[in-house]
Image 1: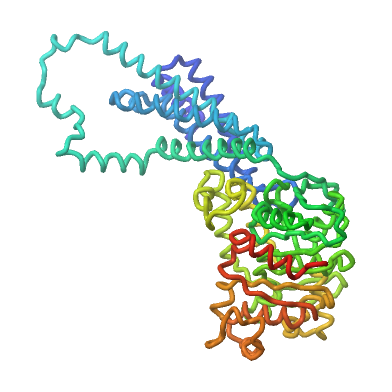
Image 2: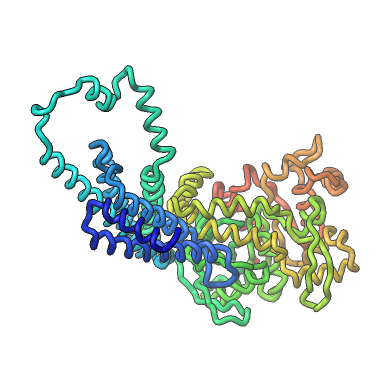
Length: 572
C-alpha cells in the first residue's frame, strides 16, 4: 500500500467515526503511544522472568497486565471506527457499558495493589489500561448518542408501512424454554471468541490477586526480624532475610535451627519451634531467599549460598550457637552443607524425612553428565547432582506464570490438614514470589548448578579416589562423628521400598532387614536404602526413628516431632 493509499484509508476511518475528527485523531495518537509502551512492558517483563541476577524475579504480573493492555487498545480502536459494535442491538450497548465499568474496577484494584511493596513496579503498568478504557467508554456513549439522534430525525413508525415479516425476522429470540439450547450455544460461543469475556475474566483474577496480596500484607506482618545479609559473592546486593527465634538464651544448651524443605516457607515450622521453646529450648526458623518475608530468589543459587545466608543471618540476629541444624525434605542436604562448612558451631544434626541429591542421583536414578570446573580448579565430567527433569522446570514455570492470576492460591489453600499458622502459610504459598523461588531452585539444578555444594562434592570426589560410583557409599557427605545425628524418615516415604516381611517401624533396630535394604539396587529401595546409609556413615552417634504418617509430619504432628528432637538432644 502506498503512502497516499494509507492516508486515504485513515481519512475514511476518521470519516466513519461518530467522534469529531480532531478527537478521533488525538485518541489514535494516544492509543498508539499506549500500544508501544505496552509492547515494551510486555517484552521487558517476560525477559526479566528468566534473567540471571539479583534484580529479577516473577515478573509475570507485568506480562499479564501488558498483554491485556494490548487487547484493550485493539478494542478501543475497533470501537472508534465501528459504531455497529455498539448500535446493532441494545444488548451490545449495555454489554460494553458494564464491561467498561468492570475493567475500570479491576484497573483501580491493580493500582491499589501498588501498595504491595514487592510488586509496585509491576502493578504500575495498570496505568496503561486507563487511556483505552476511557476511549472505549467515550466511543460507546458517542455511538449510542448518535444512534438516538438519527432515530429521532427519522419518520415515526406510524408513518411507515409496517412489515410484520421483517419485524419478526429481526426481533431477538427470547431465551424461553423452547429456545434455551440456542441461547446457551450463543452464550458459550460468546465466551469462546469474545475478547470482552476473556479480558473481564483475566482482569478479575489479576485484581483478586492484587487485593489478596494487599490484605495478606495487612493481616500477616513479619513475625520476626528482617536482616540485611551479605551474600559474600563480591556484589553489593544485600537481601533481607526474615528470621524468628524463641526460647531462653541462657540455658547453656544448643539452639535448634529449622532448614525448611523445597518450597516451604519458614512459618511452616513455627508450630514445631513454639513447642521446642515451650520445653525450655532456644529454637529458630527463617525464610530462605524467595520464601515468606525474605527477598526474592534469583538465578542461580546453590547449597553453599544457602549456608552463607543462614550463617550470616544467625550472626546478624545475635545468635552465637552452638546450633542443632534440623533439615526437612530438600532442606536436609542444605543442613548437611551448613554442618560441613561450619563444624565448629554445629553440635548436632536432625534430618526430617530429608534426602540428598548426590546419593539419590548417583546411587539409583542415574543422571545427565555435566562438565564442571571444581573450586580446586580441576575440570571434570561427572553426573549432575540432581535427579530433576527439565519437564519439571516447565511445569513450575507454568505455575509461577498463573500465580499472578491467584490460581495457585486456590490449588494450595488449606492443603495438608489443619495446623498452627495455617492462614499465614496459605498467604505465603499464594504469593507471586513463592513459586518463582521453587522454579529457581529446580532450574538451577537442571542448568548444572548443583543443589549440593560443589566444594563438598569436590572433597567427596577426591576422597573417593575419583570414582563417582563410590560417592554414594558414605562419602557424599562428611563424617560428623561423634556429634549426635537424628534421622526421622516418614512412614509413607520408606514403606514402599521396604522388603517383604520387614516392619517399617522396626527399621532402626532390625539389622537383618537393614542388610537386605543395603544390598538392594532397585529404584524402589532408594529411600530406605538412603536412610540405612545415613545411619551407617553420618556419625557414630546416629540414631533413627520412623515417624508415623507422611512427609508433612514436622507441622502436622509437630508435638511428636518436638518430643523426638528433645529426647535425642537432651543436654546437647
